[in-house]
Length: 390
Image (cartoon, rainbow, N blue to C red):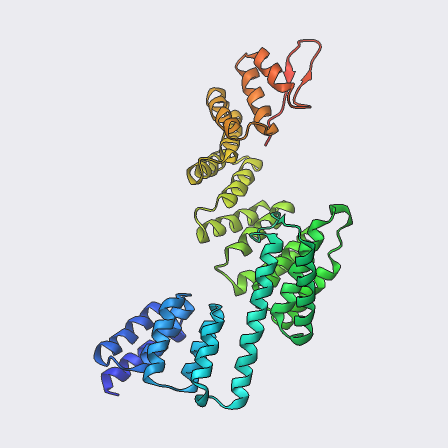
């Protein structure tokens, strides 16, 4: 290797160690401009692409590096990539066609790993059929299938026997238990076994996204707030760019009325996922509840921009206009919300307020009869006493 190539390689490796992937990539590409078959640089570009989760690009680099340098290290890296991307057939084929590069014990280890993760993936797919869920706290929609539930239980129990020291299968088991608990009436739910499964998963491996997210949710549901805060703090340490950690942490802080930290987490969630409707919903309500009217209005307007076909943004903005005293505009906005969601009681209540504030008592009384408890009449002046529904 020439002095210039050595200089670029040293700078690239130093940059990578310092976490500067852009500069490392730039230097590796400089090496390739001088030596197109420098497999060290090609391999390292594959590793950088992998770190950035650009898996297709990583595969291209790693395959090219392996073609130039057929070694166990490069082969194992490729197989690990295929396992990560759940392309188990390609991983198995790559191992089988290059079996002479690996000793028998290593081959068995990789074979077992492919088999294990293929089974975990199959269980995960069946869990998704069992429950449709986006892993946001407070959002669960279930499908009922007793045969599928029985099959899942049997497969998970078998996997627990075979892979008892694997953190992922304990997290999967915890999710299965959580799905079943959430199907029960809220008064009879007992999250003890579910909590233990996720905690055991984290005991095996602390840097564990599914366990952290679900353990945090369970601790919030069971009012173990300090434990939930600690769990999400670990999540932020290990996964600083994971949107769901910050979203669910914000719900926790809102529950315990720590509105400052709730705001910090919601703003971080928006930074990570700028057009997430649910995050702006929570942020708009947070600002409204803390009387930060202008920022609340901005959040609700953003919701309407993101999805103008959902009523929630209009309903929140209408309530804000009432708080600002602009009843005419509130009326127009709330009418729009009720076109999209005609039976929503909060929208009806707030529209009734607009009628009364604009002197349209008859319309207000007529609408208020649809919504129990919106009016308490004063016998002295016959004026409706009302409240803003937030």
